[in-house]
Length: 370
Image 1 (tube, rainbow, N blue to C red):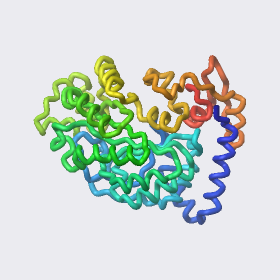
Image 2: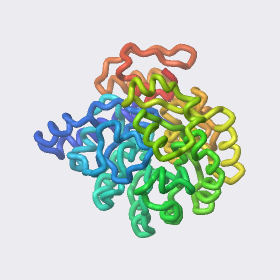
Image 3: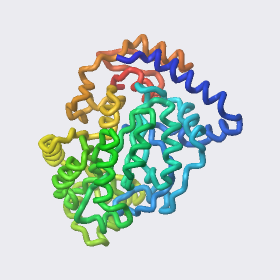
Image 4: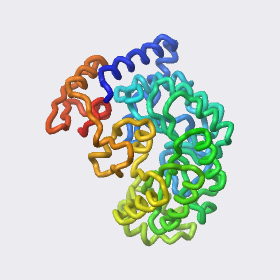
């Protein structure tokens, strides 16, 4: 079991190192960056090395978020980015700290040498770190990644074989991505297949083939994910001649048209998801319903998103639900050390807090549902 007090001391020491390392100008620049105030998603803190993506995948929602197809590195230098994260009130560093997820609005390896610089600096924090990619990563590059001193969890996205020309017109081929899995696996990584998005009536039937190919290439786990759609994405898929009847039955089309930039989740049915979980296990892959579970399992820590209490747990070998959790008194002391005034109460092994803006931090420190 980890101690939140030790985690708080470690975080303060790490922050102090960067306070001393950076100039006042650099610190002010970092504090103005969204990383310093962004609230984490269930997968953890989404950290951006690049903004924009040239792969132009038909199903991608980032183009509805005002990101374009011309990738640019983020404005912060690696140490500035780390400082920005450290100053985020909900972020805490360390192996038992906040999860880090890279690749949510871009392809992180568009600038491969720059990606290494950022990953090396981020690894100084010690947090469980995950990246998702469609890029081809060579054997030598994978070996270089394996020397980064943190628990890196690679996710390689493959969602279709038959429809790659339609759904992923400019992304590296499936063969290249399978080779990436082989290279990362050979370098010692536990690689997860990122089977997301699964679009009802479009690519669901390909899942079994993809699971088998990924396992043969060296993947040991799979994240089974649903689909986020906007009206622009819907129209683009429709214009390409895809059969969207099943999808249309699962989303409120009136709301989709009325709010064209809003993202709507198109879920899998319980039967569909259960079938894929069973298939994955039969093939030899550990199934996850969420990326945070893959990252936590890879690092050997209790999932900070508390998936084991929210119906998202697949009873993986990490066995989060059987791990002991810190005493509430230690959580309170950790918050005091971090300089935060948050009143918390324990009720039936759940925590009630006075200030919801620190919800994520308290959840990480306590590993309890709020």
